[in-house]
Length: 120
Image (cartoon, rainbow, N blue to C red; front, side, top):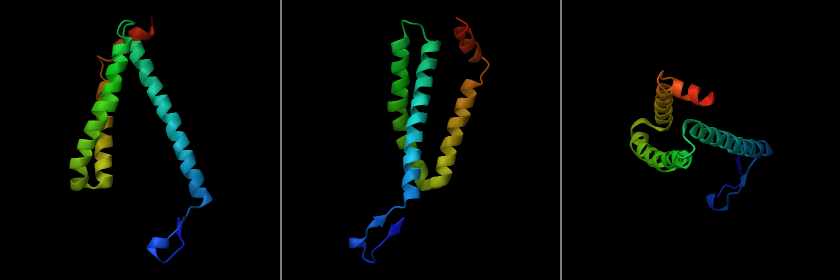
């Protein structure tokens, strides 16, 4: 990233080709990973729900992701960023999400539900 003028009003930013290629690669990777994650979440919702409640389960999943997740994320950032800083608050939130996901996924009562539905 290079700035080619001494005056801030007339500054032009030159982006190297390597940086531009890296940004494009990251954006394409983000799209593919997001699609894989969302489709696997929908597949899991279809697997653990009845055919009659399939749409309702996906609706709850979307409401939790888009509504609840965005709201909790904004509130968490509002309180954590001024107190902990960028890196520490990001690590704290990621650690809390990983711990909660680990408790849900690796809970012994949760595993038979997934195993019995996949055998059908």
